[in-house]
Length: 156
Image (cartoon, rainbow, N blue to C red; front, side, top):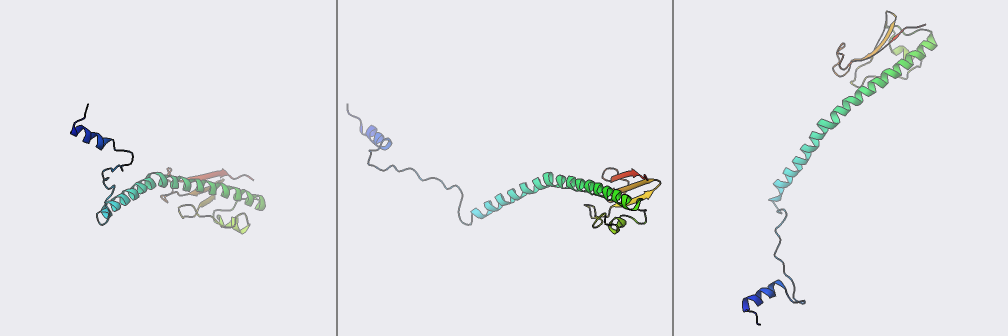
């Protein structure tokens, strides 16, 4: 049986001979090139930067505050150790007037530390209690949410 002319043409288009090249239709461009590409590149760049900014705001900033609080707690522990060394050397704790600078004078510390919020640590020796504190982020004493305090009784 012979194939009609339309069937043969169709079969030649779908199944070319082995030595005939297969020509595929041109593919559409993925992204425009030239001046039309610039606005899309800026939109993509700005969206990427905004996503990074959101991550910094929600992930890094809270961890930074937690790290500051941890550092202040460690500084208070080091100050307590320096106070114990001062007591061992001098037989007493420094007075409130002498303050933490006296720890440097007897070489219990190299220098008086500053808290992570760039304020000096507080010290008092009154009423039989030694107290160290950091005012925290807000810088106001008495705000229990962010103040750090270490108290110990004065013992001979």
